[in-house]
Image (cartoon, rainbow, N blue to C red; front, side, top):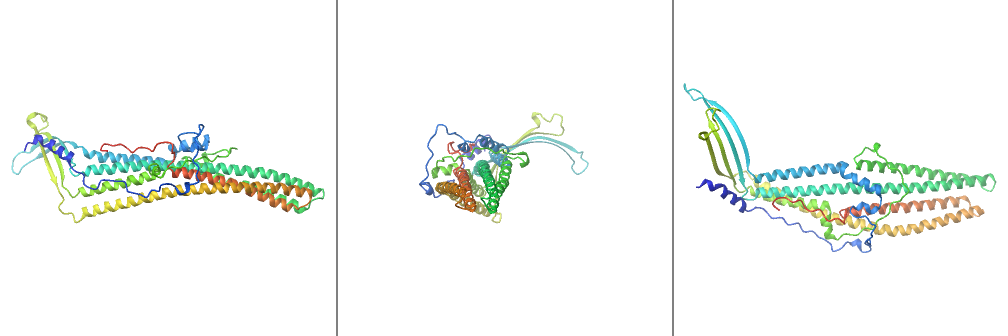
Length: 470
């Protein structure tokens, strides 16, 4: 055999070798042609003044945009996901290193003596050893394929963590602004109630109103003031939640109340096929299925012999002096085949485990797809029904305001008791609060829909990670 041609022959075997195990195909899922709840959904019309790029800019709040920008830098869940992604890419690099030979060097000095009176003999060696496994059966390629898919899944996990943190922050911020609006409403109402209480006291002192009217007016005022104080609890909790999402202690963060009320944006719906590409959790589940599929090939390759090429080059002498000289040089080169003839069923069990893991990942992927469509349908239905409820509630608030005006006029004319005024005041305030509550629920649902659609629909879906071998 011509050993000079051996490395070339082994390289050709490795390059032309087959990769055992099933080739990956994305699992089939049931994808509807359209969303059920999108029938009455109106796609937002293009506007030249509408912000482009980040989905949260649709709410036209500069402070909100500043806060969301901090999430990627300081949210601890996002930082943890980024570290996990770096870990996955490092593992991929470790898997890819198996394509290349392992080279080591050694320097040894020994002193030995044979039986008898022979003097001890010194033996010094300087060697460079190389070992390379020919990927004849595709074990290394399948392992790299699995590592690449796992790294892509980790990248999708990072996008999912970022999207989840962003959506949570936007929802908390919008809810806080709605609480501020509700508190302003109650405080303004309390100012009106205080005027009513003063008028009632004046009428009582003039002898044209009963003491009962005064106590009812005062009870109404104090109850409303208590409502305003109680909203402070909810606002504090939302503010604390925003601080934690930004990676800050709640004691070091605060948001001043502003008069502007958040606006509900128009949101275009994505096609179902686009949803499969945009949702990071779907992408992560699909990539894990690909990784599990490649692991089957790794387990199956264990049934075949491993072909390695070992070589050594070095110098050997009875002393360090003159060690690195041509007469002391030696080299070895040769292939080796290793096959496990009996393992008590270990390889069969590993393959069965790999197949079961793949089946589980496929089921998880399909369930993730179904849950994604449910998220979209739920939020579309919520927005559609809340829009209808908002119209009816606005009519109720308008009617309650007219009823309150009539009750005040009738009370001043002396045709009704103050109880009618108190009842009308409570009804009107309750209707206004309910209107704001529906607005808050619509804002939360709009963020939920954006998250369900995968975030920013105006930016192309991120490409997969590119590695050697694709």
